[in-house]
Amino acid sequence: MALIPATILTGFLGSGKTTLLKRVLTEAHGQKIAIIENEFGEENIDNDILVSDTQENIIQMSNGCVCCTIREDLRVTLQDLAAKKRQGLLDFERVIIETTGLADPGPVAQTFFMDDEVAESYLLDAIVTLVDAKHAPQQLNDRQEARRQVGFADQIFISKSELVSAEELDALTHRLKHMNPRAPMERVHFGEVALSKVLDLKGFNLNAKLDIDPDFLKEDDHGHDHHDHHDHEHSEHCDHPSHQHGDSQGHHHHHDDDVKSFVYRATRPFSPAKLEDFLGAIVNVYGPRMLRYKGVLDMEGTERKVIFQGVHQLMGSDLGPLWAPGETRMSKMVFIGIDLPRDILVQGLDQCLT
Image (cartoon, rainbow, N blue to C red; front, side):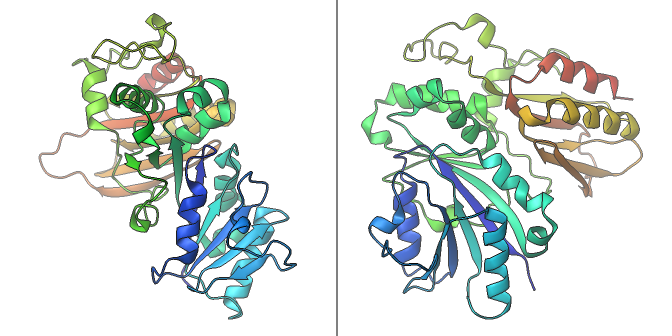
């Protein structure tokens, strides 16, 4: 049986997750989707759609979707749904898991890799984060969980942007890009997002596409070569509060968030043994603080690109496509995490080059 794609939907309170899920559950989109709701949410779907007092925790919708509230562990719920699908009791093609307002999507994502039974039935597709533009600056200042949700995302949707000024929106986008330069960002109205932008994003596939926002890099690299690793270190000079704007470069916006990203590039190939040892050691020590990392690598001894990526301590790699004739072979990696020791990483990676 084909694996069931799963999407993790996370986001700030009031960012429009519920609106999005209601639409999935009621709209005639021709897809059969099971929605798993962590039912500790402040704004539950049940209020409008589900009959709250029902004993059954799986409810069939008129459009073929299934809604299921978690009363126990996610793993059990996923296994239960997959078993019912195999037995022909439930018909659905994919799963969307809504995490509660301040949940950390990390452990939810890890479930798909660490639990063999879950991994046999499901394929994690992507983590989608909704950000409420009006309250984001405050939430990002106050709550590490909100910052983590941004760091984990494969796709970010900014809602309520009509409630803030163009400058505020610009400052927010800039701030989010410093935390996560690989997630495309899009403004949405009232959490109304086309389903095609939420599903099948392939954020966890080991593929050769390493999306890092090109404008962000252009602005941050200032033409340095890879030995000048200061492309994102604005935080040292930046003690301005988050609500202060100015400076067209955007360097005045509060970039001392603990969730940060940095990009590493090298034009010499990596030694496979050295790199494996180094990354293994780093993940061992810093894994809990590493949210997402991904790279397309030039490895000694292979004519193919090597793709690697990870979440926390879980890391995987795979051979990608051949380097094209005439293509410049170089390695490019992005690390997103909480206060990662950039200099240790850079030095260590440099030492793994041939």
